[in-house]
Amino acid sequence: MISSEFTKGLLAEGRDTKILMVVVDGLGGLPDPRTGKSELDTAHLPNLDALAASGSCGLISPLGPGFTPGSGPAHLALFGYDPWKHQIGRGALSAMGLGLDFRAGDVAARLNFCTVDDQGWVTDRRAGRIPTEKCAELCEKLASIRIPGVEVCIAPEMEYRAAVVFRGEGLEDEVSDSDPQVTGVPPHALEARVKGSARMVQVANAFLDQAHQILRGEQPANMVLIRGFGQYPVLPQMGAIYGLKALAIAGYPMYRGVASAVGMETVETDWHLDRELAVLQARWSGCDFVYLHIKKTDSAGEDGDFSRKVSLLEEVDQYVPKFLELKPEVFVLTGDHSTPSIMRSHSWHPVPLVLHSPWAMPDGLPGFSERHCRAGSLGQLPSTAVMALALAHARRLEKFGA
Image (cartoon, rainbow, N blue to C red; front, top):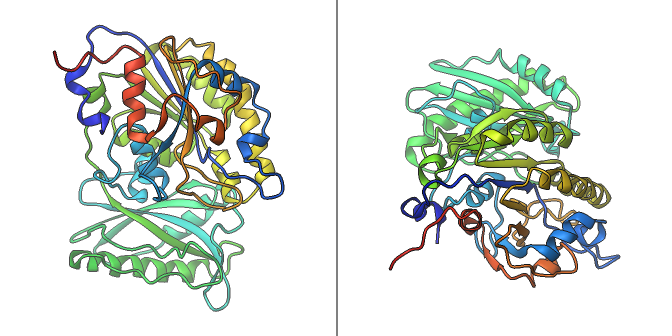
């Protein structure tokens, strides 16, 4: 059941209860073969462990068993939207999050600055995670690209990532990625998935050819990979389907983009937890629902840095009492997807979830981790069910039927 399709007719009138959803990016992991413990098992998490005892726990799956999600569809699912039905290119979300001039008919894509060798083969997909300041400098250089009949707008996102918007006649977004997702191979050739996207492939190839010439003398970011082509999305808005005044607090622009696409107000901040907490505290009284995104755990998992991910999880745990001091009627902490450090990538594994509310069933679990949450009262459920559960525990849904 997809909550965004069923909740509108069941909304309770006159409720002023508040929901806080904290999304720890890439939260789930897998055991280190040397210890048999996952990152969550390894971390010292007294506050999350206490929530696992007093709240309701379970595991969520963004796309269904076996399917590995990108961050965009994983977040759409958390917000109650069917990610298979509402597919949005990652580039579109980045463009929206950055506040670019992005309109119906445009096509946006995401850029990864990368390192290639003399043969043009990818040796580092993230160019050593160059700082955002360097990314901005390189984007200024790419701004000199000219393609007949097409306007091009480029902006830095974070670290090695940037976004580009193409505006012109006959542009469609059904185009494959050039990012091979591994090193030691050349970038993939772009392909039109439908006949109408052939023009977009020509435009993107012209962009890449010029980018190669502009960046060839740079190190380590001497090329770009392009992926996540997307047109401007049109989705049902959260205010209408949930009756919520919703706010998104996310340091990383792409996550502001997905929040904006579903009708949340967004606020620009950086990705340090103390800054995000300050915004939360300042804006809490004016909202019914706040989504707060924590990014660095996912980056540590993608880098294969088990110890750093453990440390970042422990940092998150220290903020849990500060979140609870706001006294939300419903507090949800989960992840968008799993990013096991031993895999260095997103994965299909289910994600731990804890829900704290006066109406939650206390599970009495001994800790917050993948294996403990598997025994929780919520069981294993689709990520799309989380919003309905949050609304129900906030007493914002009426009974269905006689």
